Amino acid sequence: MTNAQLEIQLIASLVAIAGAIPGTFLVLRKMAMISDAISHSILPGIVIGFFITQDLNSPLLILLAAMTGVLTVILVEKIQQTKLVKEDTAIGLVFPALFSIGVIMIAKYANDVHLDIDAVLLGELAFTPFDRLYYNDIDLGPKSMWVIGSILVVTLTLLFAFYKELKMSTFDAGLATSLGFSPVILHYGLMSIASITTVGAFDAVGAILVVALMIAPAASAYLLTTNLTKMITLACFFGVFSAIAGYWSANYLDASIAGSIATMLGIVFLLVYLFAPSKGLIAVLYREKQQRIEVSLITFILHLKNHNEIEERHVNHLNEHINWQKVRSKAVLNLGLKNNLVTIDNDIVSLTEKGNEFTTKAINYIITNEDSLIEDMKDDFFLFRG
Image (cartoon, one colour):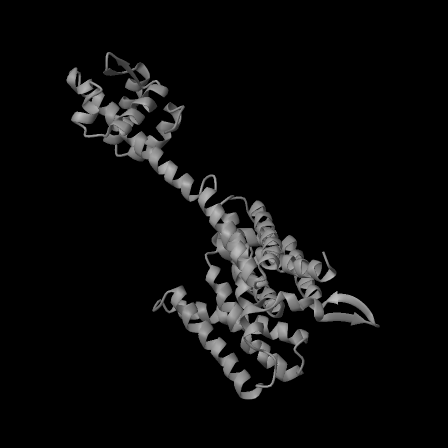
């Protein structure tokens, strides 16, 4: 592995971690698409900063771009507060307008500046090792690494300093206010960090990959845990893994590094979306199937409670009169037997003592309109679920 390859992976990993931290809070606050708005609307701030400094590497560009990102959030919220349009519509109105202003300013006043589609949208990680930082003729490494590293240090410092406040304002803004925290200040502080991270990674990875690195790892982590600390840690891990795996995929396929990383982020999310233990699609479908069987079992044992006739309690009754398929009938009876709610003797189904107790309580809950509590009852009576 060459130094350039190592530096590219390191820069991509730093961007992944720096993006995953604010991205986690954006996902939890249901503001994921605001990152896309910020990543595009900071362009006017960059252009104005360049007009003032005539230097694309000036820190003023980051400051003005961050201010433009916060302005985007303010405009979106002001439009949303009118109640005339929803948040997604407000985002769709604000960021194209600001992005277009930036494009017009470049075309009109800075047409000879190298700020083309690669810089604005795609970025190119492969070029980052060539733009280096020197101090007294000492090579300190790529500039992007220092920029992103500095932003990450600031982000981590603020995270550790205001973790409790951020957590509280994210999950319960009312409680945060009553305890003396200001959710508004924390909100705009978070937006500022998201803006600074976006513009800091702008030249290295581009606007599109910044959004992907902010949202996709956080969304994947959200499906795996309800613990905020674990969610941030998982989001950082998914981001770094995708950055490194995406780089080597691009190296093998001779393809775009940014595109490969974004694709890897999508693959990671898809795998988590399908196989997450509790929130994954397969787990949800299994749980729904399980609930259908449990509801069918409750329906059947209530039926047994109200009928003493042999023909009504015969195994074939499930298929002939209740119109259940044999597979479903077998699943229902097996669940009843495993939980000792029913017994079968010569194909005649009868309630056990435990089954009688369950159905009596279930009928009481239904009569008193507290049937939702049957779920709690199932936890008490069902040793085996579905």
